[in-house]
Image (cartoon, rainbow, N blue to C red; front, side, top):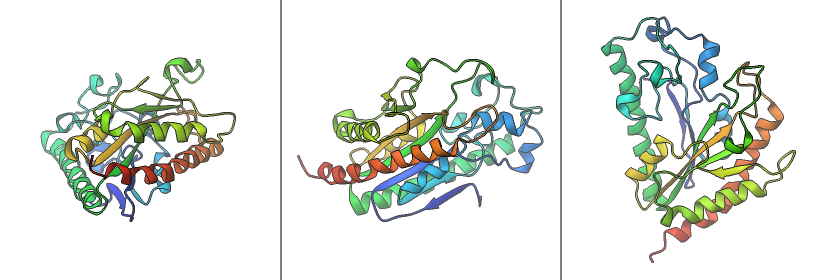
Length: 263
């Protein structure tokens, strides 16, 4: 199971996770895929792993979501057909149950390691915060077609589904306000809540397993930092997004100890 996630542990209660950054598929599955590497890349979250570098503790997925999707429930973590994968025909030949189970073992190992990592932060700091980083497509009609309307596709979609907002709201608002106030090239970032997506499975898991201590925000960034059809990166915009995330760390760190105080 080596080489399926990269984990670096730090000494503050701030974690950045990019579980869909990976592109590699193990050999026994790669031959069965009907999708080309470029087609897979379009649905993955390339370049999100670099953004985690602003956090002292960071976790980056190294395997493609087409091998195992760590952001779904266990019974759905391996795509079986088009209904699981944006209408795509994923397999030339569906993987056998033993292959599927080997993917699920990666899923189990990931969540075991995340439980150990976050339990350690809980023990040391009480409250901790997780940036659950993702990216999403907004040009699904084709490379030469107009992008989806900005009204329904914010540059940063903040997902708050599954969290205890009564407890978490100060941190969520701090994150949103800090992002919006960052001096982003071309004007302030369009940051809105629950427009395109309402929740991510990993963030739900954090709140289910660490109620009262874990705060995880699902962060879906529109792929305005790259060409989602060619994979070409706009390095300036990508770096600016990373800097914007970095600008939120200190305000959030100052706020977390307040949440540890008994009411």
